[in-house]
Amino acid sequence: MNLHAVKAIYFFEMSRALRTVMQSIISPVLSTSLYFVVFGAAIGSRMAQIDGVSYGAFIVPGLIMLQLLTQSISNAAFGIYFPRFTGTIYELLSAPISPLEIVIGYVGAAATKSIGVGLIILGTASLFVDLNIQHPFSMLAFLVLTAVTFSLLGFIIGIWADGFEKLQAIPLLVVTPLTFLGGTFYSINMLPPFWQKVTLFNPVVYLVSGFRWSFYGISDVNIVASLGMTFVFLLVCLGVIWRIFATGYRLKA
Amino acid sequence: MSDIISIRDLSKTYSGGFQALKHINLDIRRGEIFALLGPNGAGKTTLISIVCGIVNPTTGSVTIDGGDIIRDYRRVRAMIGLVPQELTTDAFETVWGAVSFSRGLFGKPPNPAYIEKILKALSLWEKKDNRIMTLSGGMKRRLLIAKALSHEPIILFLDEPTAGVDVELRQDMWQVVRDLRATGVTIILTTHYIEEAEEMADRVGVITGGELIVVEEKAELMRKLGKKQLILRLSEPLSAIPAALARHELELAGDGQSLTFTYDTHAGRTGITSLLEDMRSAGVGFADLDTTQSSLEDIFVDLVRSKR
Ligand SMILES: Nc1ncnc2c1ncn2[C@@H]1O[C@H](COP(=O)(O)OP(=O)(O)O)[C@@H](O)[C@H]1O
Ligand SMILES: [Mg+2]
Image 1 (cartoon, each protein chain N blue to C red):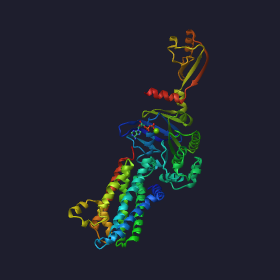
Image 2: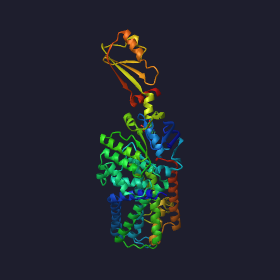
Image 3: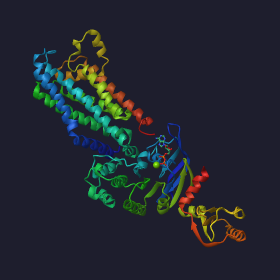
Image 4: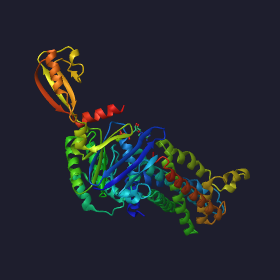
């Protein structure tokens, strides 16, 4: 194991985040806080409780998930896309490091950043709404697993993308809609039965549901199913990355 | 002297179907400065990129210090430093940060004293806290060299190191290269400037169209393939080469004032005597004469031409 290399990549990526603190930390926290103000305090007080949880509190796990997904993907995608774009990837390819070490460095840094953002948002949310976390370990497990999985997905996107447009397309066109339709703002039990079935094909439902269960003990789908699906996504992403390195796809001529 | 790099039957066909390298066989000796000389598009960068692990070979193998570049990639790559042809750098990172990053990437523990030494040798010390985007092109080139040296490699690849570089940097660079060679580092540089190969290299490999057409000691190459020219300044200008002189390899200058005769230095008979005799009987007199020896450049042009 080339630990010096993993550390070099990890800290290089972390220092990039600190340089762009405005964009990488303040802006996601600010935009999410606006939801708490609007839905938690202003509108939320007039909405009915869901499964005994106030509306403002109900949406917190989903909103954290939304940021966790988009931040993980964009951090990791940008992290690996940028050296490809500027050409500095040559150094990574010529270094005595294994694909696994490259992934640990980039994905580790991206996941760390998005977990940080998630925790800051959680702290901010507690200023606006009453939160209680029934299963803190499960909460952390979902936080970490989701961050790692979607940072892996972001890494894949960063290798696949051949322009900044594609880099932003997936988070914007796929992840945001899936998150909004994945029970962030409502319980899927509120949907007509047909749409409940359709929704089960949305992977984000499992993440949001499991994460919310960690807070309030209520869930749209079984917690075991949530955890299982999260692991499945993780394995799928790992498999794709393994293929990428085995074939040199988009990395080597 | 033992070989540090052995390239065997190496070919590369890019995904578009273009064959950039054709059955390259090449051994690089430990501690030498080897110049890979060839025109643009000859395949120099492709060859270096394969050795460094950036491009996958189509067929063939490369061993470095006894290790296969694919199977023993960790040990092999740790020995190599690469200065790429293009000025590819980060923008927001500082000089110090970038060089330290490279060292870590190649598996070496931090060593600020060593990094200070290379930054000073490359006149980058004053810029160590500057962001890379504020550096000039020449400074960026220095930075790329510093990055390549950051992990104390024993083999250094310089891909077109002096393309678009000013005189001062060129001199600094050659000083660094000579110092490295003195410590036993093997240096492979690519260039399409002949003077560069002539000035620096111990051996020269000429590559064109993906084929390595000659590998030779620099001095030997020049002796073997070198030609001399005899320039005869005529007493009376000529409008054309007289028929009586047609059997000699002659060229008439544009103004008709001089004749240039080209001959092989290593040929038994140079043909000078018979030329002069023919000139006398044809009544062509000359006022002065001069000889020139062909440079590596001429040799190179000849080689490339004969290959087409
Ligand atoms: N990634 C690539 N895909 C397809 N063709 C390439 C690629 N890289 C280089 N080539 C082609 O291979 C040939 C050799 O290129 P290169 O090794 O860069 O030459 P040199 O460094 O000697 O100028 C050129 O004709 C170039 O167009
Ligand atoms: Mg080149």
